[in-house]
Length: 444
Ligand SMILES: Cc1cc2nc3c(=O)[nH]c(=O)nc-3n(C[C@H](O)[C@H](O)[C@H](O)COP(=O)(O)OP(=O)(O)OC[C@H]3O[C@@H](n4cnc5c(N)ncnc54)[C@H](O)[C@@H]3O)c2cc1C
Image 1: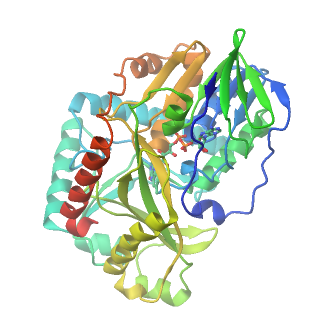
Image 2 (image 1 turned 180 degrees about the horizontal axis):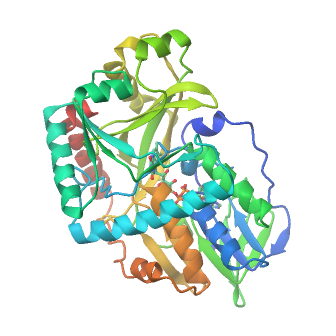
């Protein structure tokens, strides 16, 4: 029997979810059986459930989640579903050409899967819109990163448009950015709205969804697996483990997963005067030219017109970040916000939060059959909206032995490599991240 060693703990409120009406999910309060069990209702778990419903209509499919749908990292992100190379460990997101081509193909399959769901569920543009993304530079060094990125995209045969400082101001209202690079293939989502809609759509199609029901043990019972909460259980012949870094809490991929947190703040709703002073268009998203810089979104919809800022990374192998640490780190958000939006003096942040990422040192997923009939769809390397969707969808195909060449490609990737011992990794990873954040200069 595996006793789950650590349960998820999410620092600060999930702002995107807080903008939506309160949700009361059903808890697991009985001993039940199912044909398929998915653990974790993030991007990966919801994609796995959706794919299982498509492939095994009529089977009993259960999905169990420790918190509420939209409360975990799935509803805490900046909402960029990116199709292009996005290696956070590189200087300008680029990887090797051949693996980047493969990644683009896989990422696009995931975005198409999410797009089909959005269409079927008739989601609004606020929840999901394939509008592309802009990478932006504020400094000369950032400009060099963008040039590198553009050359790389050119080599891959990918389309892009270069935006000058005037075009950047027309888009964002601020004069902060000197250059931008638009690429058309990304989707922008309201993450909590999207995952909730996916969950509700799956329930309408027959999924048994249990929320606020942390799995504390997983054990073999004959040829089946039993996942227990403190007072109930689900027994099923096959399990898809979609808990990202918490795969390690279930005893898989030990010392191979890097638990990194990143942080965001969302402003109060802007008033009419603020909107006039800001200028620009009502909705946009900017990724930093330097991966260690600041992501910014302006959103308009449920919850009004707001600015969302994301930056900073910390390596926390305990999988826990204290409130003190969160409060210390998010001060950087205020600096980044003030530097970009001097015209919004007086606008304060309403929500501040952090969330878990799971990275591997060699940038590969933790995917595949990890025990008999346990399929992992974990370790999304910081791009979980896209790669989580992909892993969940392909784990469902692997589990049902569905023929899809992408499954074989996913299985062919290396295993996450072992990390050096602690506290060596802690010192090393945090020192490198602090150094890179300093080096990012105006991009942060
Ligand atoms: C501030 C921030 C900004 C980000 N921006 C982006 C972005 O723009 N684009 C992007 O692609 N990614 C972004 N990310 C990363 C993205 O959110 C994650 O990679 C993604 O959520 C991972 O999806 P997942 O389904 O694999 O895991 P998760 O979303 O973490 O879902 C796993 C679920 O498993 C549940 N779970 C864990 N243990 C148990 C248990 N014992 N029992 C039951 N359930 C359990 C958890 O509660 C959780 O809900 C960002 C993250 C943060 C924090």
